[in-house]
Image (cartoon, rainbow, N blue to C red; front, top):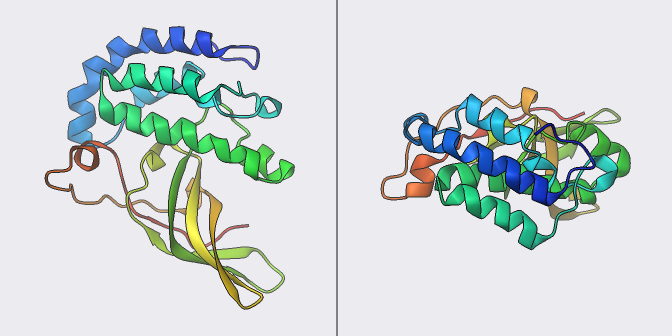
Length: 203
């Protein structure tokens, strides 16, 4: 399938069904590497799955929750770790509807690219004078970060004497990634690609 804005969730389901044998073939490699293999990620991206919850103005399909879960359940039946990464990758795109239009067009310029998010406000966001905002911190367990161009990172923002938790879209290119240790006895953590991130700038 070559995704277009005129595709439907039914088209995505059919395309994902065609990728399931490839996922099945790569299960051992995914678990050993603790990340999706590039060929699986690219094949899933080509199905249009990452467009499911994006608004139509950004090339998305505005699929219902039931339609989206139908797609993800098919993947989970083959490999839970791949489904987890797709839930994060495609599901994080829902934040396009919460950004100002110009910001959404920048962050979600490629509707076929998945994202990543980490909700815990582990970082600090502050204004650097009249210049760009600056984001400091380290975030553990950011699933799908190795295949995302943008990552939503949780941080504490201090303004008007109050501290507010926010989620800051951050270019993946500004966030070095280092691997974490596996978590004994926790299959999802052991099998899913998760890495801490550090980010020092945001424009």
